[in-house]
Image (cartoon, rainbow, N blue to C red):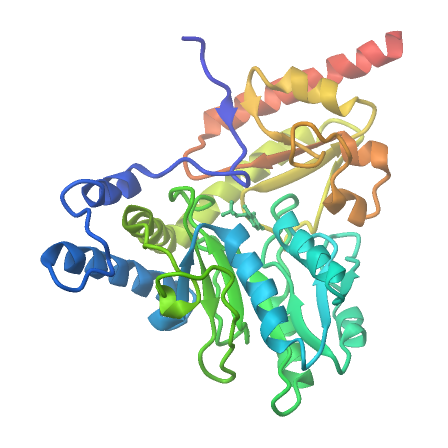
Length: 393
Ligand SMILES: *Cc1c(COP(=O)(O)O)cnc(C)c1O
């Protein structure tokens, strides 16, 4: 078999950690029970495993276990949060604030609500991808019910100041009229410290597969006290997850999610240091090229993210040249059929052409120094040869 390219696309998904797989396996076989079956040991075993994972995930964000609602991932958690708030609180107001660089799983539900009559403000971001807090203050109105700002961006890795945003939302809440603060933290869980109390976060979307857990499992944190957030369920049925999200719990995935979070938290500081070092090494080598620009805030970002725009090369030609050696993403929209420039990069003020000639590196737990050196070398030679060709044409 030919050697497979080096995987550097960890914002898209991560490989499942072997320890996570091993923790999951018994829950497909001997412990296959339904966590809602209360009359026998099969159910009790599954319930105990779910309870343990729920406690781990809650502790990771300083929530309590009853505040964790398992979902199929962050897309579902975002939909539940945004539509659930809209449906419950529409009589209080119909204005929602979010930012231009959100994942499509925030932007699209917001645009859907617009068709139902809600008013959505998509705040622009600064050139470095961070939110302008004065703009947020000014955008809040009497009828604002929800502010949704992501913790870490999936393309440029930029971290938003969640504690400051949470403080603003609390400050501007009046009596019973709370401004609910939601954060899509799919890229952040396990990678940076998250604390829903200190940050005044009311709803938080999580997913397992960006942190070396399995795909198809995530969670929504729903605040129960000060204030209690009431969500209209978006999926009705057996009444699981306190009636907020019906459906038989996917025990193996939940166990894997819990294990993945446990491992990530235990190694967070050490791992971030290691990954940041790999990124620094990659950037130091690549930045010897001229006409290469770092997208997003230079320091306020995820350790493993390096998003670059490259002058004087065609985006698709570059990706094609890189493909045999490395698995990375381009700066175009996520779908393979859509070659429009990324809405995140255009939100930073890039021209369409430069936004398109962009590459996102997502470095992770299992990458090595040797891999990074090989990637840097091939990247540099590919850019140089494409530029030479361009000159000859
Ligand atoms: C990956 C991702 C999602 C979608 O998560 P799924 O679990 O794949 O549905 C949502 N938001 C952000 C920021 C992401 O990175």
